[in-house]
Length: 98
Image (cartoon, rainbow, N blue to C red; front, side, top):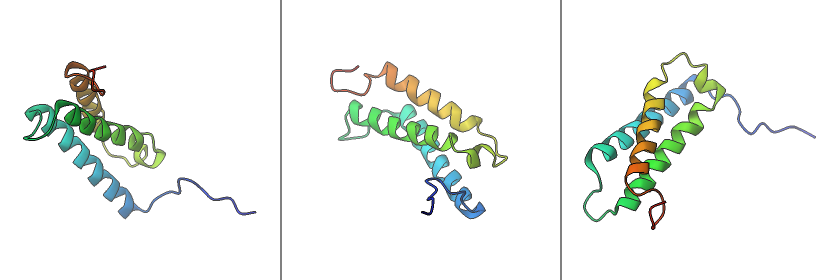
């Protein structure tokens, strides 16, 4: 029986695309933290958006091929910390604020 790898090593082009998506997540987190909720968006919805992007960064940073890509990762780590801190001081991730 053949073994199927759940996380095959991506090509350099795919890794570049992953870093581009990670950059997008950093942008969303920083923009959301700077500007707060947009029109017709609740604080909870904003917090959930920030959380999704922070968890995306955490997931990607856990990948060996991201760790071994030879790129600085501090910006991504800082965005996670900033997003988590924002959520903690702006009502949390549930309707009741916890």
